[in-house]
Image (cartoon, rainbow, N blue to C red; front, top):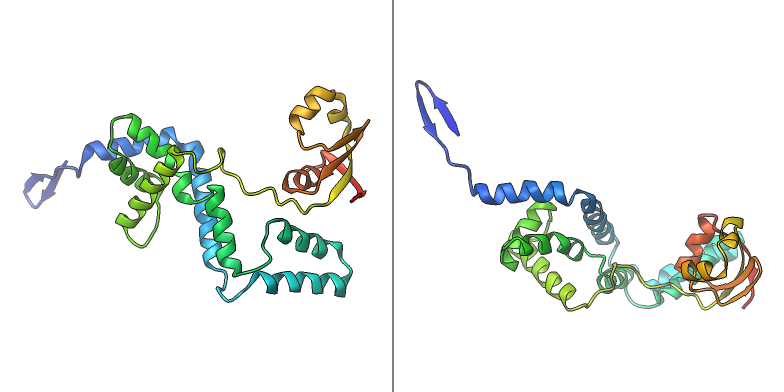
Length: 232
């Protein structure tokens, strides 16, 4: 690139043009996955904002108290969900961090697909981790620590230490729910229905008994099933 200073011009060589080109290619190739990385980084920031002094016991007692004061079942459901995720003792911040870590929902794990693409193109793992950190705009105590964390996460992914795809625990409260499936789900037929909803415990026509877990709470919220009560 020519730069003019007065009547003179000089050539300034771009810094590592090969790396810059790789980064731009990877940004275009992995654009659909950047959203997952951004979400993981936002989640990490949100957890860091939690006061370290807050305990799971304090939050659980607060929800139970609000349930008794207001009579609103939403607070009771929230308290049950805490118990389903085993958030009943210890520091709340540390417990949430542990769920994120074992579920593979960290930014370092989210970026490993980019690391793999750089490795497949001939980069060393450390070089690939370094380039991936730039592509994903990863933040940390230092550039070196960020690269090391990504490299370790990549090795852990290769060793199958995280669920694929990354996902949190089921959050099963131990209760059994009676739900009515929406008409289009009933029309799908028994075999297809069981393939889509493998957690069905009992079935009688359009009514089913299902576990009170994250999966079914989401299906009820999204309107795929109607909650008719708790049966045990």
